[in-house]
Amino acid sequence: MAISGVVYSIGDWIAQECFLLARFMKCLSCTGRKLWPFANLNTYGVIPVEQGVLWVDYIELIWVTILST
Image (cartoon, rainbow, N blue to C red):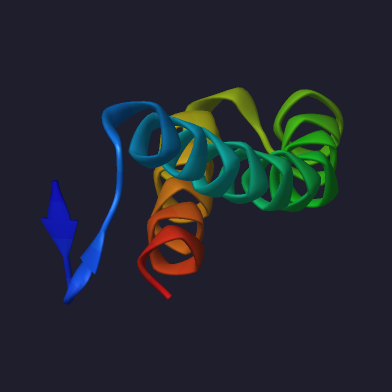
């Protein structure tokens, strides 16, 4: 299989993709551990029940912004 002018075997290509996916998931997991506990503590402790859905939607907007960068 040729990718950007370099010939890889299928096994090498799969190993490379798995490595990149694992690195991405580690970064994503660390970011999630920083954001979601804060959001959940505020959702169930500070934010009134009537505003809970709006608050979670706001945090999800922030999360999507983080994922897109």
